[in-house]
Length: 449
Image (cartoon, one colour):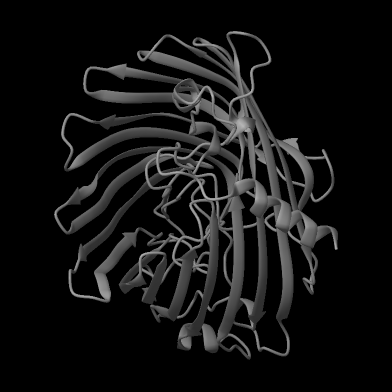
């Protein structure tokens, strides 16, 4: 009963936002209601976004409710009778954004992620009963620079290497110092931080002292298309795991990204090179990622696209080099909502179609053909975990994944999503014991306010 009341309350609070209100952002701390509140002084609508604790300050509150019912049969390519989950996930977020002055801001966010029905119990991706997801202070020097210090979510570019991890029930967070500045046509972010190690209880998470991330990410805004990013990322992990073994890893990434939309063409291409040390070995790794789509005018087919990607794997377990690419701290559902395969030692091609039979309805269908690049390296999951396959085999083809999703934007703040798919393993997987396909379906209701 309490869950139903909470769902109804979120729907009532969210309402139908007028078109001129600020958009809801992927990172909620990026929202700014200051201008809207100044222009709507006499409006009672969205009063919770325009609170005035003091004469010259602005307090905005908001949050999120997300409810997901998911069924997975044959998880991780096990037989359906050995690995079936019928689970219900809940996520609740409330935040307060207090802008004390144009140069000083305090932001706090409380987070609760719950799960029920998981046969093997919840993982840190499924449940985190109560925690402070964000708590930072921000200093600004007008439009020229701002410094953010404290617990915060980070997402760079399209989230291929550093992301807040929206797909799973528990998002990723960092303790970080971040400096954002405008240098001519470039927006430059420099940061250093550590991710958190999540536990399932209340306020029992701990900073992960085994991992650290730092870097500089720059976006050139001189041209509307194409946009151009360049970046350097440093990463340390004292407990890194590869097929070659476990140990200390210090990895540096140099990359660039070309992206944007012109006419009907949308590009998102990225190249990254990695070097560093793993134990006493040199790291030499790389990736090329691409997503290209074209919008079609003929109803109801709205666009056609293809995602083609490749990431290096280790060629020789006995030499003094590690060739496995590391995606660092990426988004959780890298290829699909199933989130079974990760972007290490692989190449894939994923054509997709997007239909929009109604302005509020979007349907996407895709097929992912996935191989491993080096037969001397393993197959990895999205979190860098080695999947149970015969790594000594000379076979490359891993699996074919089919996915279909339908999203309905009921209002600007309320979305309903139905997603399903199947991962059909190839001989490389099937020859490792009694293995079968993984099927999944999930229904998600998400409300922002």
